[in-house]
Every structure is written in C-alpha cells, then in structure tokens.
Image (cartoon, rainbow, N blue to C red; front, side):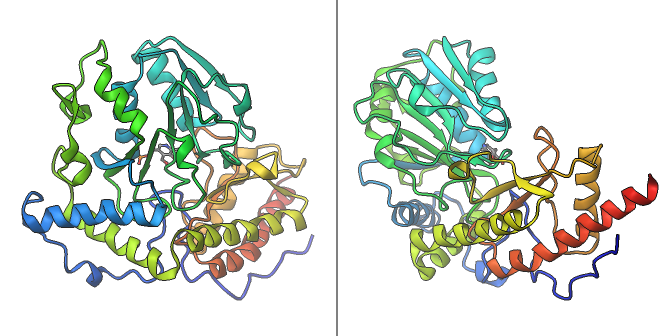
Length: 385
Ligand SMILES: Cc1ncc(COP(=O)(O)O)c(C=O)c1O
C-alpha cells in the first residue's frame, strides 16, 4: 500500500473541539476592551451589558416576546438542572435520551429526584421516535445529541395543545438549527458552543406555560438558592432582565456580546444555520466518497450539523478505539485538528465540530488530512501484522 503524501494545505484554524468551540473568525482579545472589569454587575453599566446579552439573544434567535430569557449559573448543566428541579414532579415525566448528556438527565430525574418517569432511549446513532411520546407528561430531551451527532429533524411530533412541558437541552443546537419555540417550554444552552463564547453561564428560556408552572407548583424537595426562580409564589422577574442570581463574569458577557454582534453582522440566524449546514456538508461528501468512514447517525435526516460524529467502517480494524485515538493523535501532532476524538462514553471514532464559528475552508482543508491519517495508520497496522 503506498502512503499518501501529506496534503499541502493545513486548516488555518485547527480548533474543531465540540466545546469550548472555535472563537468567531474575527475574534481578537482587544475587542473585549469595553468589558466593565472590576465593576459591580449590579452597577448600571453591568446591568445594561447583561440586558443587552438577553436582548441580543432574543433578536438573533427570534425568541417570542412573551418568553423569558435568563442568564443563570453553571452553564448549560445549571440551566437544565434548574428547570428540572423547579418544574418536574407536578405530573408524570418522560425522559428521552439517545446519548450521554440525555442519559445524564435521565439519571438525575429517576435516581436523584425519584420522579415517576417513563424512560425512552435509543442507541448511539439512532433517535427515539418522538411521535410515540405522551405529551401530557413533562418531556425532557436533548435537541442535538452532542456525543452521538444525532439531532431532532424537527419538532413536528410535539403537539401545540400538550398539557405537559417540553424541556429541551439545546446547547449544541441553539444558533445552528431552527428551534420551534411554540413547541418548546424550556430551552437551555451555553455560550461556548455554536457562538464560540466563554464557558460558565447558562441560558434559560421559558415559555409562558413554564412560568405558569413555576408560579403554581412547589416541589416537595428543597431548592438551593441558585435554582430558585420564584419568591412568594411569583416569578423573580429581575433574573430575566439581567439581575443574575449570583455574580457573572463580565469578561464572558462582553465576549458573548461580541459574538452576537458578529452573528448579526453576517446575517443573523439564517446565516449561522447556513454556515453549519455547509460545514457538515463537507464531511457528508467526504464520507460519501470514502467507504472506510461513515456518519454515526444512521438516518441522514437526523445527522447533526454541529457535532458530527464519525466511525471507521473498515472491517480490518480490530481495535476501533485504539485506531481512532491514533488517527486523532496523528492529526493533533500535525497541528491540523485539535480535540476531535469521540466523547469518552460514545462509540469509538471521531467528532468534528461544524458549528457556525468554524470556517468551511478549514474543514475542506482538513478532509485530505483525515484521508492521510487514516491511510498512514492503516499502513502501520499492516506493517505490525
Ligand atoms: C447536550 C449537552 N448537554 C449538556 C452539556 C453540558 O454543558 P455545560 O458544560 O455547558 O454544562 C453538554 C456539553 O457538551 C452537551 O453537549
């Protein structure tokens, strides 16, 4: 087997990690100079920045005016936990998972909160049949399974007249995929995914029905201060205007504002979605042209356009995990792709982030390197045999 020569071109930015993700293409630290560092987040300047982050989020994502948007502690996990601990238990729940993060929410609800829940799961690469769910229960699911690269194709299965709440972890979907707000009562995400922001803060979006639940239901268990969204049975409205529960990083806020500006400059949500689609398409075409690699998502309609997960299909590879690790390591050593090994709980393979901050030209430059790394590793296997 003759080895392919190293490709001549390298990606200008080798950062294809699935979170934290590549910064916006125009990023420079100097652009954060307006951050009110050393000032109280409750001073007028801090409050106005936090409110701008909420308003910008609404504008870019097209979130309805009657939905609340809050900046909350502990990133996406904090936002999901806050919602589940505050709202679940009022009625039966359905917990839906097709990869590691969704499975984590199942564990919380079943083992920690001990809520009466039906659990529906699908293996890596597949998705649960969302039409089989009883939407008069509260349904918790992940829009895009970051560790399997499988996403909801749309929200068509969710009825408008549901009695339960839909709680959706959309951290690797927001800003990349169309989210049908009328079908979603709670949506969570963080800044370090599609927007390439900094980690630490979560975004919690609540429909009017979610607020109604908060104001009409008190869980049987105690709620820590960082989860509490009501006082005396009324929503604490300040949280949804930028009066955060505890102290945020104003540097991270400034960075998120910069990313929102960039998003608006390039054309808003349609442009962000188009960038993700074009990025994922580069990999889809590469898979179609090579019989040794395939998308982990079995149905192309459910294939993620952000966290694209790949498996090696060459039957000659006995140690799938070892092979995938060796390929990822080779690419990292060459400085052409960083952090693209599959998630620790996921099947062996690669995961390449295709979110909006990644340049399509960088993915195009990466593909020949993937070919090179695969063939080089295969040759090493042959030599060892
Ligand atoms: C689907 C999903 N949910 C939750 C998380 C946890 O996010 P965070 O670290 O922002 O809490 C991740 C992180 O990758 C994720 O992909």
